[in-house]
Length: 137
Image (cartoon, rainbow, N blue to C red; front, top):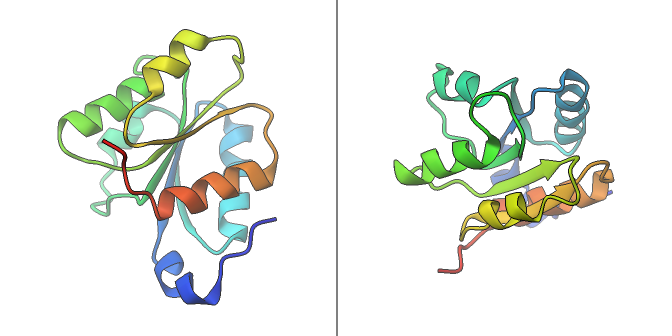
């Protein structure tokens, strides 16, 4: 398990991770995992639910399922980048052989592309990297 250093504890405590996945069991397990690491978390069942959310606080990191009904996680991230909401993203998918989706997800703000099932440390390492992310243009 990843433990955050005391030096970055105050920054981490204020951090919020948004999870967008249409599978309720994935949302619940990621919510529990991320909270156990001392981070704030908000979960959404769809890209549209995320976009329609009333919470004015922009998340510090996104965990996006690649394949969502209607708007995909990739399309959601592109939409946010187009409106200058630059948030580091971690993409998750159960479709390991989808190289097209992997290349479509790539951007300066893409931190990781994880294949389900991934272990807790993989996700927490990616979240930790996202919270200190500096894009490579």
